[in-house]
Length: 72
Picture (cartoon, rainbow, N blue to C red):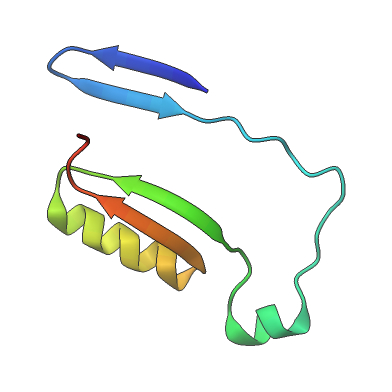
């Protein structure tokens, strides 16, 4: 994980996750329901509208989303 921050401009977090050694094939149930990925996501954005749209998209993709509009 790396962090770049500039006072008055913002902060960027980059998280590197290990790749899988083997390819994972979606199950028939996943394909039928349109869910090809799943997991948990932490979404932080200071713009309520952007956060709401991004949350809806991530949830539709199969993620369990925790959304914050205040970094504190």
